[in-house]
Length: 361
Ligand SMILES: O=C(O)CCC(=O)C(=O)O
Ligand SMILES: [Fe+2]
Image 1: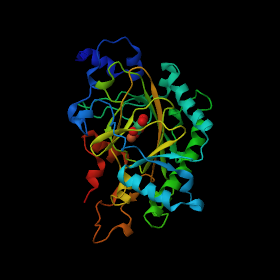
Image 2: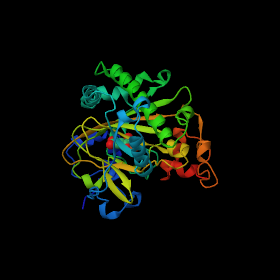
Image 3: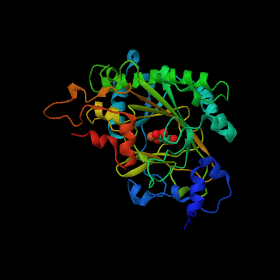
Image 4: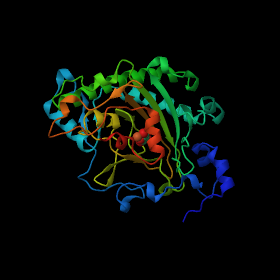
């Protein structure tokens, strides 16, 4: 049994970053962080944190170089289609971004989270704002908090960057993140075109729905070790509101799990791979063929973990909907045409619902 902290301790802890809580000598876990059974998905037999040990269930690995238009392989396109239609995610290898550059990207995140609290708080987000540095945004009194601190930044379009939240230290932070986002923009384009070709559609049919000022948000996720790893989650079960999410994993510590056939399947570390999943907006555009899969993050009792998620999506306020060619008498339209804003996403999330369910016809 883990005992929870008292309510005055809780009030105090609510104002602290998870990194501060983890570093303090505490004998009890703050109540707001304790997982609730009714928020779990999947089989309760593995709800405690261990992922499925079944060897047949593994996250597919896709050779990205074989998705490029000029060297496209029908076999790899087929693999991509079945990976995204069944798992909603895959590990991309040979994606063209050098391992040494990925390490540079990890390093700017690491240096930021390792800087002093005073330094980090220069980027502190406002209570009701998602952008900046801080712990889980509190959307309701009942909400279980994620065991993570984040640095969330709009990277594209560039004129929407709010540089007051960008770390000054390390000094090359901005240059590296800008360069990384340009590379991820290309990856996003290749994935969208390949997904379209895998369905024998015009390769621009998803990309066209992005509009001119497509959006990309970066979220550095830092998971401190937790003395009670099975009592908390780094991130509660959720699906992404993006079109595509490109995740740079920690080099050594695993934690991400996707829900497949009611079992949690862990994502192993594949050196220099990028973990790519589709979010709700591609599920809508593909009329449900591609799946925005629920996933969660478990934490480690001894090791910290850091990841960087890049959320790629259409320009703000742009209407999206299922591609016309995917609607027929046999495959009726499953989702409405919607404007998928982050407000809409979080409003549903706050009420324990999936935004995509509110888009169903
Ligand atoms: O840190 C991870 O492994 C995944 C994070 C995630 O799911 C998210 O930021 O949406
Ligand atoms: Fe996610």
